[in-house]
Amino acid sequence: MNAVVVGSVAATTVSQMEWIMNNRSNDRRDMSRRGVLVCAALAIGAAAASAVSPAAAQQKIGQADAKYQPGPKNNRRCSGCYNFQPPGACKFVQGDISPDGWCQLFVPKT
Ligand code: SF4
Image (cartoon, rainbow, N blue to C red):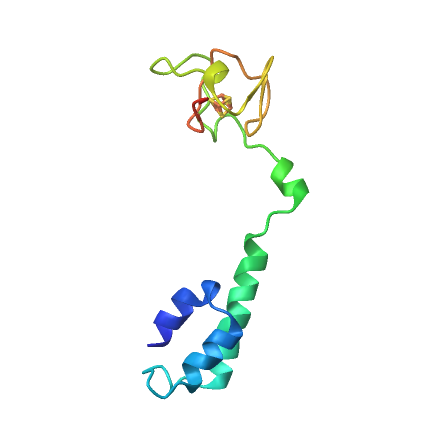
């Protein structure tokens, strides 16, 4: 039963978890207060770990990692990608980017 609570803990506040623990009609009432607090701490830690610093957000991946190629793929090319920064850069991929190139991070402009 604890696994269910851990899986949903990110969307659950400590007070909600305490209510669950104290509600006698709930089959989770056997969960200890310590267990509730440990779950809350894990959720906070997970949220902090997933936060991206501005410096990290600026980092780009290598062309090889993005599977960049200098030519288009199935009529998809960088010039038609939302991430393209004319005249020859990309928001997410390092180095010179050809308007006619393509990579697996392609996102079509709308
Ligand atoms: S296709 Fe890839 S390399 Fe080209 S602009 Fe889009 S994300 Fe950047």
